[in-house]
Structure formats: structure tokens, C-alpha cells
Image (cartoon, rainbow over the protein chains, first blue to last red):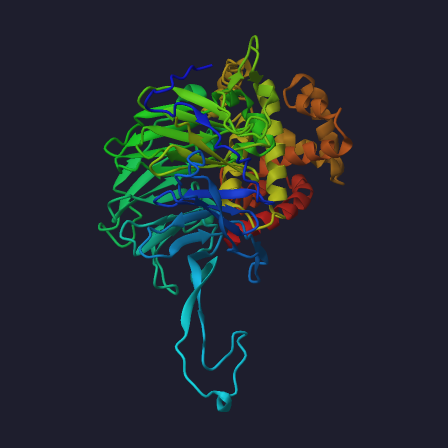
Length: 447
Length: 184
């Protein structure tokens, strides 16, 4: 067990569960994406059933200082429905693959949500007043007989119970032949991109019937297909720059100023393969499942099946840091191939200051790595461990030999309990962890 | 020949995944099936004992490269393909191929090719059939996606005519998969 000093800077000191919140289980479906908005006030989740649930952080009040900003349900809506592609005789899943927030520009909130084929822009707004005193209709909405109206009055706005409504403002459809895996909002706030297995398209938020194709790696002959796009993201500050990762473990950085079609990369990040680690499954485990720019824009982080790598944009030939997430699985790859776990796509996130990175694992474990102190911790998201105000205890996986008390052996891990999606508040030490159909929110301890 | 056993097992698992992928909700997952086909290719190379690096591929990181590999590389050992295909010919009505395969099996008592079959026997009879089909499929597959599509016909023609009629049912069941890929 790694001891933690209470006031140590860097990785959270002690993470514990906010008081009186059990895991937020409003989901009957598996959570498929989690995302904080730019201020951290809102937390959006998407699930396999096509629903989006948004949580809002409570305002801190002087009366109840111990209720330091809990997250409560703010809005729920059905974003996508199952569809049927008649031409190909294929069902299109309603599962929400990704949600991305737009920065707030007025009182309403905007987010993008996508399933395999269609991206939608949703407006989430509050209504807390309602007009009363119309002339031509009565309070129930029934039209009045005009001949009965003898005087005019001005309708007034009266307060009402807060209502949060979500309306679809744009639907961006029919632009992807393959399954969409990523969406990313550009820092110009006017455009965004959507990426599927073989192509990346650039959209303007205002225009739904056109998009520009900016990357196309489809070979002329599909028999020659050797790699697919697995994730893509815009640079946080440079609106002309984006990266995309591939199933071969490579990352390409592209500059949209160079040409209209960014098939030729500006930078190519690849680490030479370690020949001593070769196996039948080398190609699968090197496939990158997620790529994220640091908030600074200086680094990118990639997640493959067993590791997280941090790359400096200025150095293409190898990552500057590599973290082992669950290397004890390396000897189990054949079984993991058999039960399909080897295809699980884990995501990874930076904290607000880019000093800590986090990702999920199996058995409802998730891992945090402090880049400065090089310390790491394994924590578990489970009901049994989440009593109010309880401090999360670091967990340890025993890889062989004598198992100590409190350690869990590799063979006892539950591979059906996987944490694929996590999110970190943009400025505070608050994390959201999706464990199948349970959402856990953990906060740093504050005295 | 542990590595060949492992390769054989991986090939059958991979084929199972490809077949079941066709019925999946949401359509064929290109990424996953590409990865499965890459594993299939590596396992096939090892199973057929093809030279070119994979022969020294350890199934697990700690195992040393099997000594048989050296023998395969040095000697002019013929790939197992034809023998495997011969086993697959069991269902074929032609007399001579069956006799030949029986003779070959007798001759190959100590050969690595026989062991996977023996190992498969304790499993239910359906799996035995699959083992035979798998072995013939291994000979069909080329080294890339193309192995799943047009090229296998060329390979079949190059080998004995007796093989073709048996491979047909297997090819036919492959076709929906290959059609799906082409439709992309």
C-alpha cells in the first residue's frame, strides 16, 4: 500500500466519497460516455440506450458548508433512437459513443452527442418564468371568442417551477459510412470534426447538409486494409491542428492549412516495437483506444490495451513517459482474446493541471499516475467501499507468490466489471467514474 | 509443438469470432474484425510453419523458441498446408484422396500435424468437424484480407483437384463475410 501524506501536492491527497451520496445509479443501461463541461458545473453521461443524463453541481451555500457541491440530476433526454439502414439491412445502434460540450456563450448550454452514424447538437436551457394574461387565449390555451374581448392587457412573466428543456438544434446525418468513434469541438467554436474508422469530416455548426472530408485512409481495394482510425481530437488552442490515432499504435498530427485533404501528416508519432514482447496479440494490444491533448496543448496522451503513453509534440520517435496500467494481463492475452476483453477500449484523462493522468481497468479498478512524483495508485469504484465520507483505500493486485491480506490475485479479477470511461473536473480534484451502469463521483478531501 | 497447438486454437477462436460478427447488432465492426483477421494471419503463419519471423514467435513471452522451428527452417520441410487439407478431405466422396490421407496419417504418426487432431478428440464431436474445417481453411487463407476473398480460389486450383469439392462448402460459408467486406 502506498502511504499518502495528507497535504501532499500532486496526486489527490485523500480521495473520498462526498457525504450522503451513494453511487448515482439512475441508469438502467450501461454508461458509454462521461464528460464534464468547461467549467465543471455540468457533467453529462450517455448510455447504451441512447439517453443523455446531465448532472449539475449544487451551488455551495453558507448554511450547509458540508454539502460542498454535490451533483444532482439536471436534465434527462433521449438523444438517439435505434434506426434501420434499409440499403444495407443493418440496424444502427442508439448507443451514445461520445458527448462533447461547447463552451458556454449565453444562458443555454450546448452539447454534441453522437451514435455510430449521426451527430446531434442539443440545446439545454432553463425556463423559470411563464407568460400570463394573453388577450386572445385563456390560461388553458383555449382560444377566446374575439367578440367577447372588451379590454386589452399586457401579458406579464410570472415565476414558475424551474424546468430544464433539451431541444435538438442540429442533426448532422448521412456523412459517415463507417462507425463514428470520436467528435471534437474546434477551438474556433465554429467547427467540429467527426471521425469514423476510415474518414474524418469537418463540420460547421450552422450547416448540416454539408461537411468537408479532411482525412480519408480508405484504400482503393478494401482487401488491402491494414489500419483504421481509432480516435481523433483537435488541438486545444490551435484551430488548424488535430491528431488522430490508429489501430497500429501510431498517431498522426495534421495541419489543415497544409492542404484541404490532410492525408499527409505533419508529424508521425510511433514507438518501435519491443521484439521481446511479440506475441499473436501484439497488434491488438498496440491499437490505440484513446488520444487526448493535455490542457497545455504541449503533450498528447494515448491509451493502448496495457499502457498509457505521454508524448511530447516535439518528439516523434518515442513517448516521453510510459505507464503500465495492468501489465499482469500480459500473460493472459489469449484468454482475454477468447472472451473479447482484449478489444475493450479504455479511455484516459488529464487532470486540470496536466500533472496527473487517469484511466480505468478491470474489477472496477481505476488507476491514477502522478507525472511529477512518478507515484501511482489503484482505486476501486464499488458500493461496498463507498460509505459516506469514507476514504478510498488503495488496492493492489498480486501477481504471483504469496498473496498478502487485502491484495487480490489476478485470477480473481472480475473482467465483466470494467471501467472504460472516466472524467476529471477541469479545475478541481473531482472525478467521475463510470462502472458499467453506475456512476461514481469522487472528490478530494477538504478540511 | 505447443506453439502450433496454440496457433491452431487461436485460428479456430478467430474464425468463430468472424462468423458470429455477422449477426451482430449495429453491423460489422470494421476495427474489431480487422484485428481478428491480423491475429488469424499470424496464427496461420505459425501453424503452417512458414518461415519469415513468426516461426520464432513465442506463444508466451517466457517460453524459448521451440526447437522444431530450427528444424523447419533448416530442412526443406514442406508446409503443413497440403496435409491439413488432406485431413479436411475426409468428407469428400473421392476414394483416392481418402486413402491417401489415411496413409499419410499413418506415416505421419510422429508428425506435429497429427497432434492437434488427437488433442481435439476429447472435445465434443462437433469440434472435431471444426478442427478439420479449420485445417482446410488454414490452407485457403492468404496472408491478408485478400486471403478471405478472391485469392483462395487460385490456391485451390493450384493444389489437387480432389481438394476443391471439399473446400466448396467452407468457401460458401465464408462468402457472406467476404461479401460484407467488399460491400464496405
